[in-house]
Image (cartoon, rainbow, N blue to C red; front, side, top):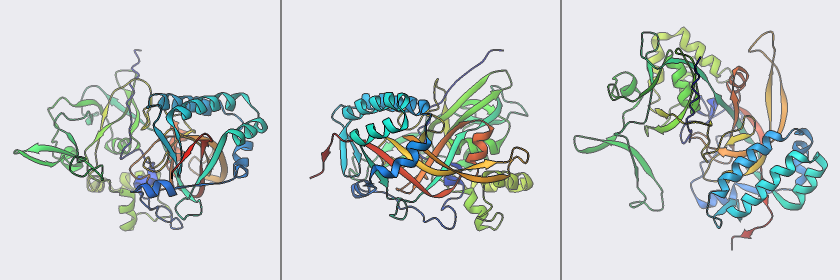
Length: 418
């Protein structure tokens, strides 16, 4: 059998933000909606210096760190490509990209070769610890999760495989408004129609009105529209081909329309309660209400286009994501590529009962900030990448853990704002 392994970069600018960040959140009723960061002040105030004693739980619990070291080396490569003097901000503390490159590489080496006591000594000597102020200014953050879904598809359209994954259309324009609004750093996605600039096609126009047909944009055809919808939310995934082999697919561009949460719509309509909202619950509702499928999916006008690459899946800093180590945060306020720690809880499932949760277990781990997402906004949101497979899907489908803690590790060599 010939195998195709084709990866697709996922910037996830608007989409790789965890199922619950995008499907319903606002979050559970006890979680405050995080503030949106729009200014330099937000960046400066998002992190606060804390003592290394707050990290004891992570250092003691996370003893197997080889994969964290691998993720650190990916970030070191990202920093090495930046201008050496470029500033990396940790709140009101900053270091240069050159300092980050050197410190992250050294940390990767120490992380995989040292015991917990030696690692703690090294960290306290060479790094500062910062904690996110969270969504309540008390350090509490909401953690969701995302993964690579598996779809079934074919390189040829048929009655079974009839839903296309589209490449970026040639008439899609990404227009920077910096020349007109230099302080806003805005951009729009549009197209020309009748010599006028107009918003790009929305989901209904693409899926129902077939606005992109006969343009040779189809990368692959899949057998399930709902699966395709959720693939667009995740930003990357894999397609098992009927011809044999696997395509790995991911984000290329979006149509520029805002994301509307179908989970939130179902809650508002009383179809699913907030307490019972989950990915499995949404899938079940759609199976039981097929006549409502188009209405619900098209209530979200946002649409993602894909492309083929090798390697990955990739985050917004163009490095391969590491399952259980890579996270997505608000790129505007937290340092891209930086090392950190995450304290949250993860579900423990009954093997006999499938989706039944036995309990929630504490999870304290080292992480690396390598991705972002449209619903991952403000200092109180984190999305944890779980990788590929049934276990990753099962966990990502229900993760919405308030009261978690997010930390970042900054080299001590620094300059300060004056």
